Amino acid sequence: MNSNDPIIIGNEPATQQLDSTDPARDLDRELKELEVRNKEVELEIRKREALNSRVNAILWHSPIALAVLTAFVGYIGTLISWNLSRTDGKVQHDRTLALEEIKQRSLEKLEKDKLQGALILDAMRTGEKADKSKQAAANLLLLADAKLITLDESTLGKLRQRAGDVGPGLPSSSPVPELDNRSDDSVLASSIDPNHALRSASRSVGYLRSADQRGNAGTAFLVGKDLAITMDFVIDGSQQYELTLDDESAPRSYRVKFPPLISEPQGFALIRINGDPGSKHGWLKLASDAPKVLQKICSLQTRGSAQQLAVLNVANCRVESVYENEFTHGCSTAPGAAGGPLLTEDGKQVLGIHYATFRNKRSALRSDLIAKKIQKILADY
Image 1 (cartoon, rainbow, N blue to C red):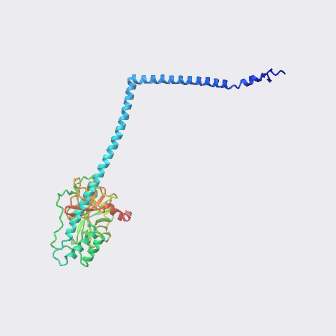
Image 2: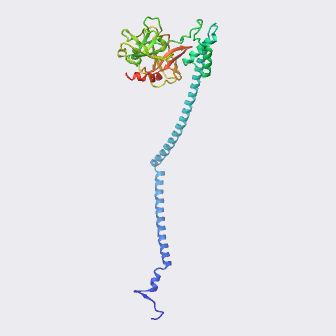
Image 3: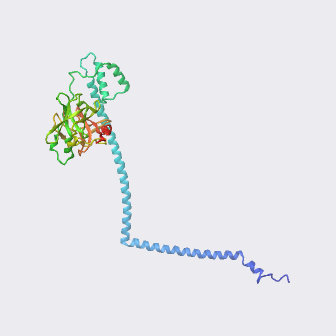
C-alpha cells in the first residue's frame, strides 16, 4: 500500500469521518439557530405593540370606554378618601370619649369629696358635751363603718383609741339633714299608660311599716313569690311588720317573717313575706349590669301610705354619678321613699334601691351587686 493512499474505514475515507466533527461547522449551525429565534422574538414584540396600540386607540377615542375608565379612577379615589376620613373620625371620636371619661371621673371624685367633707363636719358637731372629742371620734367611726367616708387604718386606730367606750350620737340641737327641696315630679302609678312596664311593676311595690305604726316605715318591693327587698334601717328590730300592696283594686297587707334572711347594717335587707304575695302581684328583676352615668331611669316609691307613686319621663331622673357600691340620681323623692326601686327607663329591671337624700344628693345602692349576694336564694324562683 502506498503511504499516500487514504485509509479506508468501512465505506468512507478516514478524512471524511474527521470532517463530520469539525467545531467550526457546529458553531455556524448554532449561530443560524440563534438568528432564527431572535427574529421570532422580534415578530412577537411587534404583534404585542400593535395590539396595545389598538387597545389605547379604543380607550381614548371611545366615549363609553373613557367614561368607564374615568368612573373607575374616581371610585378608587373616593374609596381612599372615605377610608382616610373614617380613620380620622374614629381617632377623633375615641379621643373625645377619653376626655369625657376623664372629665366625668374628676367630677365624680369632686362630688364624693364634697359629700364626705359635709358628713365629717356634721359628725364633728357634738354640742357642749364635756367629752365632745370622744363623741366626734365615735361619730366618725360610725360613718367609716357604714362606708360613707374613707379613712386609712392609722386614722381609724387613733379614732378608736380616742373614742374609748363612748358611742356615736348627735346633740339634740343638731339640725335635721336637709330634705329634698327640688321640684316633685312624681305621679300616681295608676295614671301611667297600662302598656308601660312600669305600670305592672308598680303592683310589686308596697308600703312597709310596723303593725303598731310606732316603728320606722318605708318602701319595699317583691323580688320573689315570698321575698322582698328594703333598706335595713326601715326595719328597726320590731318583729311586727307588714307589707301593704295595692293592685289598683284594694290594698292588701302581708305579715313579714322575722328575722330577715339578709340584713346588712346601713345596707339592704332581704325579708320573707307570709302568703306568697308575688303569686298575685308579681315581682321585679334585679339588673345584672352596673348603672351608667347619665343613664335615664324611672322610680317607684311610697310616701307614708300604700299609694304608689312613680317618676318617669323626667329629664333629671337619671344616674348622676356611679361609685363602688352605690350611685347618685336625680329622681324626685320624699320621706318614705327609702327602699324604693330605681328602674331602667323601660321599667323592666331594677338598677338600684333609693336610701337617702342628703343636701339634695339622692343616693341608691347598686342592685347588680345585691343580685350577686342573693343569687343562690333567687335561684329557687
